[in-house]
Amino acid sequence: MKILITGTAGFIGFYLANRLIARGDDVVGLDAINDYYDVNLKYDRLIYAGIERDDITYGKLVQSKKHDNYRFIQLQLEDKAGIDLLFANEKFDAVCNLAAQAGVRYSLINPQAYVNSNIVGFVNLLEACRHNEVGHLAYASSSSVYGLNESMPFSTSDNVDHPVSLYAASKKSNELMAHTYSHLFNIPTTGLRFFTVYGPWGRPDMALFLFTEAILKDEPIKVFNHGKMVRDFTYIDDIVEGVVRVIDNPPTGDPGWTGKDPNPSTSRAPYQIYNIGNNNPVELMTFIKAIEKALGKEAEKNMMPIQPGDVPATYANVQDLVDNLGYKPETSVQEGIDTFVAWYKDYYAARWIDAKA
Image (cartoon, rainbow, N blue to C red):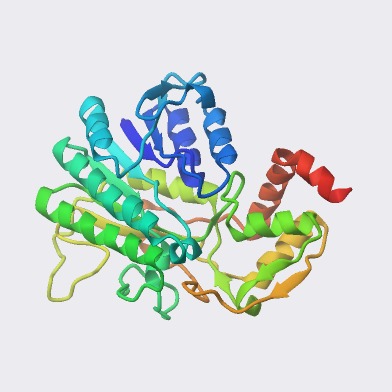
């Protein structure tokens, strides 16, 4: 297939692009390369796949120096003219949208960034799919859409009408807009509610990255909600396996769906929502102990109240993923953290040495 993956300078998009390149798909990667976090990490992800930093020009496709079947373009989702031109020229079979303004806490500071990328940008993708006969649009939603829901584990059949951050609201809006386009224009769409993704090459604003860096520097770590947080930490390889299976299996619609008893995760239209999580929630203090074990060093902990926009617990019900696609994530937290720490020490070798000195 010819597949567009947005967000390929980002964490999940980087892994997905390399996975699909390796299996022989014709892949076009797209990313705005914004400065939400260290752009050097983003460029290094691109370099890993053969896209040299100096070759990148906004709006121009760049051929990978490592893979004949990979090209990259720097482009903003809110750039409608650029998106329309790319789709018209390339005629993609499938699109996986992993580009977004990420982060719950940052949405309290810069809400407009979420509107531009996550809402305006997503409409641009929907319109481009509509007018270019794209066979399947898979897109990142988030476990944050569950908001004030306290029913555990979170199920895709649950009500998600009470988000507690603009980031979550923007992701819920993606699901609603996708359903509209599936219903009106018969575009197969699948939303993926990711649960706390972690692993090598991960985002520097996430807990695992922040904790590892602080511990190595003998600095205290911020433990929110006084450690009484529970997260369904999901290793990156498990996430990507789920995404690949979703891309390969576009929804066809549920003929048994009824508006009298509507299942929010399906429809008569070709529309589907999946949770992709480890289905094994871990207490934050257990997660920290696993990092301490991998580093061989104890953390100094600064206990703090829960931050606005955060939820105390996440826990994914992945039965739909098991039933429909035969897949369930299974990497243990200690195994995933050990792999991350090994990568971190290698990637930040100089910084790690300085921290130990």
